[in-house]
Length: 405
Image: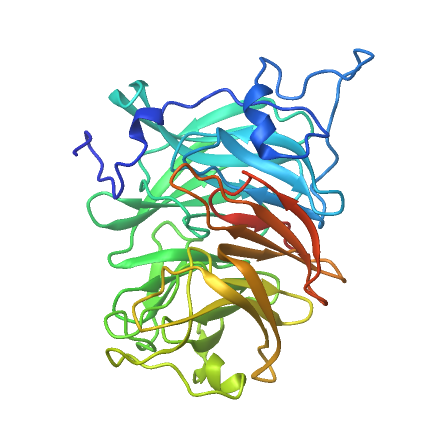
């Protein structure tokens, strides 16, 4: 299926591409109830008619990005298991949270006639307190692909947005959020998955196994590349990795279970990898046909708790190239010590995982559901693995928590 002017990597759900109005009141416990809560006002008044507003995003909150069965990005409080609101969005959109907690940004694409007509690419800005539309910022294009955490990122002060595009080669759109305008497009062939670097620009993973670093301050961007450190052909890296933007440190995970750590900057350094399976005291994964090992998998296979440096990884038993299979266990990895300190068995395989950045963190898992997207959202105590809440029909796309700034 072709669309005018841009290339789409997914045609699923394009009949629903037009942005839907999606609103809901505070206190809804299940996303399944949200479909009945649409109204013209994003947060309807309370029982006494007073307007309802949300506080700035909290560390206990999780954002469930829109899948194909929900009309927006749902906000849940993991302390209560209750839904707080819904940030409306189109299908295959990407979300970002203002570091100052004043706005939510959605990079999205719509057409004037539903799934045809004139294509419109934009960043839609919503007030974080009321969830009302503030403005729309048009730009030159974006890639249409869901369940990716690093297609749309903000710089350290939230004034600049980087939007990944494919037109026809890989590029990055730079948008000035403070002025509300598109700035420039940076050609970046073969690279994607952006990580903002304070005071410099951003880095991105590339198909030749290198890490590209883009300095954006000047009139013309300066692009440098590291030596290749992984094989995108033989053992690719998952693109939903862990990144600490404050320390400028990334944790990458390969399909076989190799863990790479990188210190980003003008001259990034990438440490030699280690096996997560070996860190658990078992045989490392490999690429041999019919060999059965424990492997990472799912759409969002890893979550990084920044303060502790512990990564939580969805793992399953299978052969190589089963990287899309959901995790039957969660492995807690002390990255610095290169040791798996805990394994949590799951009753139902999970496809996404996130962790709150609290002192006593909670794990959020999207369980596998049916073709209608009717999976459950699980909230677990990260220390014990005990289930705190199970929210039916609440799974969706990428899970996102509030990061330290």
